[in-house]
Image (cartoon, rainbow, N blue to C red; front, side):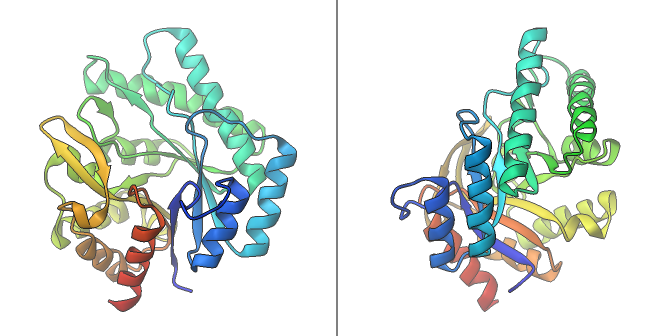
Length: 275
């Protein structure tokens, strides 16, 4: 088994029914290695349910991560929205940890017209409070702000790497498709290598041994991401990316978020194994 595991964001489409447990079993049947549990509409799983998920994942040899609800904005201007955002992230981290997930991915904030520096200060302060609470609970899951695809969204590579260096327990979720959509660039082998190099320089080799990656095809315009596409329907140079990941001996989880989920996850895994 390579150090990089491939899987899907949520249960594969071919899992019937599409529950988390059936998704994990289907991932194993397909020969994939990981799955991200999508709590994107809210955390609706009991502790007993989470323990069952952990048992099945261990039995099937499938590694798990989790994605927190979309309704999070650590730069909201209303205190009650900040509090709700913090609670949603904490709730995800608590249930996901019982599931055995080691990483919690989330969409961190919107600028809402604020200068990026001001948004960064707000985000860092509110995230620090969450990390303090998780530390008190002895919850060791990695909290991973995602690289975002629209210019209105907080989450440049620089912002995410800065948070990862300044706060304990924070690590990046590198969404290569989002970064390509946001910049209109970063879609070639040398550019993918430059990202890997940046991560290594800022966070050290251990960060490349413990990566959490999102990949999909992507449609984009002037303001960045429009929607996810299947890899073959997009200009995203996934072969070049896989080559860069392999050359840097990246380890961790690679989650496919293409609309066809497992088809592209298998395509990425096959590309990795044949390079």
